[in-house]
Length: 250
Image 1: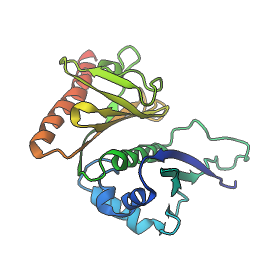
Image 2 (image 1 turned 90 degrees about the horizontal axis):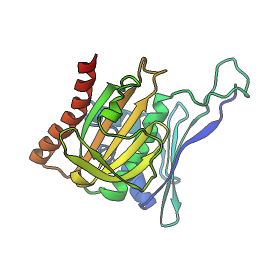
Image 3 (image 1 turned 135 degrees about the vertical axis):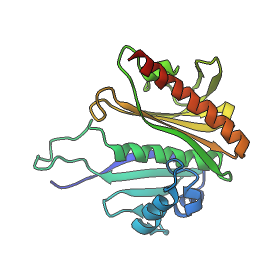
Image 4 (image 1 turned 120 degrees about the horizontal axis):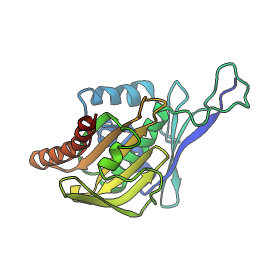
């Protein structure tokens, strides 16, 4: 079956192409947007963006052996950022059989990373990042979904650029604007954390039975140790309360 390239991500970025390209080539800058903090992050960045990637500085394109490509091109006063991947295919099937609708963790990862990159270069390009995250949380049964218990609406219906407010169980709130959304992800700016970015990404039940899972990644910028420790306590406590409620109901 012949593989076809598909455009997974195609987003306008409000920053010059050279700024976006630098954020893809300088490991220190990649660490300000890529993924989330953990002990192996620097090594992962080095492997993916230096050792595995083939960079063409003239046309600002990164290519990987598996066919993935990132293309950075001028677009008006800003930049067009594209992520291209090999076409989904079913081994032994005809070209007419689609693979659409099947969960792809790598697709979802590139979507998250592209938006994190956009957020950095548009809003925090000169600031160091620290993240707070939770991974693999059970979304819970239909009669008691985790996102509802946390005060989040169901994903997919929000308007990008529109405002939102979430009230925690302890009565505190956080608010901002919807930065991006897809069928399985939403990105929310958080005004109360000096314009942080909260990514909420779901894995559907078919790929994480029985209820599906969710990942939270909060990217903060410019926080000192005391401010970060307070934010970590607040956010870890927030999603911890949701899972505690779930466990208590079982």
